[in-house]
Image (cartoon, rainbow, N blue to C red; front, side, top):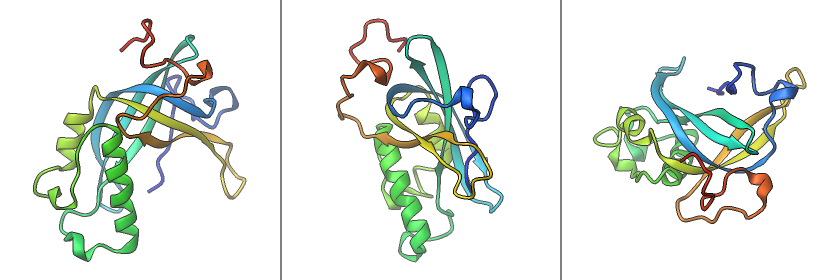
Length: 168
């Protein structure tokens, strides 16, 4: 399932006036909720809030896709294994541990949604182009940088972790 990304003004992030400059931003998970895809798999919809060049806060959404709970790690398809690898990386970026054996017995989408709210993270925002050319470019969370990574020093990358005026 391909996520749809919207920004704080309710406009799709592909609107020319709402594209976010590519770069890394210090963000906070403003909300996290469990949803179900059309295929029946659960995912956690994350809402990241971040300072955008000191003008106003911006919101950007991302999804944490989970493999089906009834499939054992050894029985995952290649596509499901790729989903698990992305999930692991993003959970590490939020400071949340993940082991393949944790789900469904421990670290479920519900637990992740509860634990993720309020987490600080560095998000890597990129501009994604529609491969068919039908739709405008959109801003996406390309990655959630693991804890301990250094934030770039260029001021064009939003609020810095050591910034005294940062809202979080």
